[in-house]
Length: 84
Image (cartoon, rainbow, N blue to C red; front, top):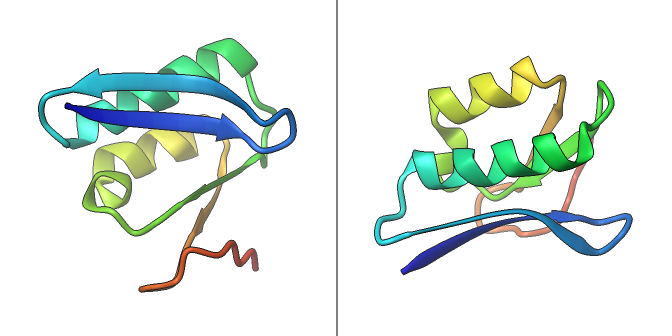
């Protein structure tokens, strides 16, 4: 089983999650949709991920842009947040 989780770093709470037997983009998208429905983030809210294929997918990136997120991704082999 795979678990995708969206954390709100301000409140340190889980605001979106999804479980699946396969690690595909729809797993990450379902977690993102739950987080957006719960928090209704403002335009320009930062969404940070690693460079996993599910987060780099066209569908996931399209969903982020549709919801007004500023996209942040770690550098290859680097898990730290770098916002430019």
